[in-house]
Image 1 (cartoon, rainbow, N blue to C red):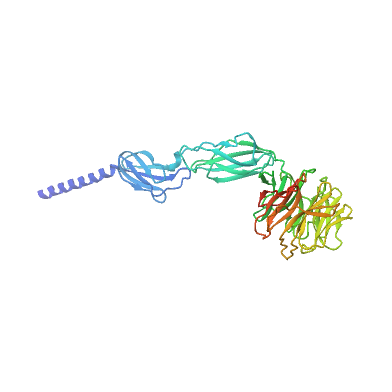
Image 2: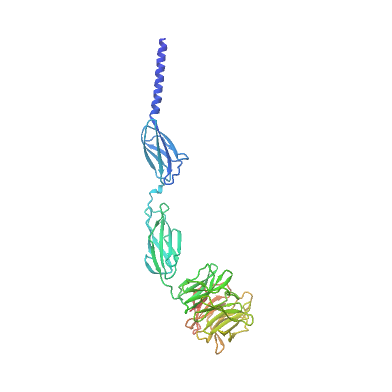
Length: 490
């Protein structure tokens, strides 16, 4: 009995001691429960490393951004860390048997990135005047963090209020083509990919007035004919776009407008525009331009600029420059097609041909359709390029002296002739013409001391050039514009 009591006392003491140690272990700890999300979006972040200072346990967040971290009683700085984000800390006090809840809102590592400065204009300077029509906008933008910058430029036409936007620019410049005599407003937005893009002030500049160019010509671009204006010294500017097919420009200084041909769907009509390419208007509607080879067809202003003459098959029409008053002036008697017309006062020069472009007749009529004089008839080969002199005493025309004819209308040796009505003689003025080339589209200069032509190799492949010939000098031939054709010089 004595031993039993001793054994029982020891067992009770051991049991009490064991219970006491377990109770102390539980009561000496607490739990930190938390959730980690991205700031602004509040999207849960997985695999965020959670640790404490002083050090205790280290855990990682689950797919819901949640974690559970047991810790001894005490004060801690709990740290949340994940690549691509700024480290975040939260202070907690762990109590015995208590659960402390915290939420981390992690910011991207770029959160402390500074915004770039607003761009400033370099060229043209704000308020600049007489700016060229083909201008390069340049600006400067500074970023303290030296981030890669991209730019968006907005350019507004102050007259039409049309807006051009250039996006994703990686250099601080942009080449633009603008209208003449126009005020523009432009602004640069700078983006460092981290912050909200920064807009510059609105800058302004005014372009130079359109020059009084004497030359018009055509270039082939993007599969279309584009009309250019040039000053004769190399300066040139497109006045139609390469999204439309426009050709055969004819300037009238009285009207200060250019008449030209342009495709409208499958047909061709007469259009007019101002000298700078503005105010384009379709003139013909019910009777389109029609005939042999649209590249050969020519039109003409009345001398006073009030009306335009154009061919349609075997008929010649006159139409007022506002599109009214369509009148048939002439119809061929042999069924030939009218291909070219040139008008000066009451004299009208015509070139007609058969369906293949041959059987050419060049002659003059009056405004009543009465024949005045036959210049050429019955000769083989191609001919054309008619242009009356200012006093109607002479006529320029071109003729293929080889007399060659084929189904592709190839010309082998086309030369310019100056025909004098009084003597009915034709003088060859294609002075110093390179062998194997053709002189086409002959026109008098404004002083009639020179002739302008399209000179092109007869292979049909080599690019053409526009050249001038002095009528008083047989050895003078000057190239004005390369890769160009259909000149006008007024």
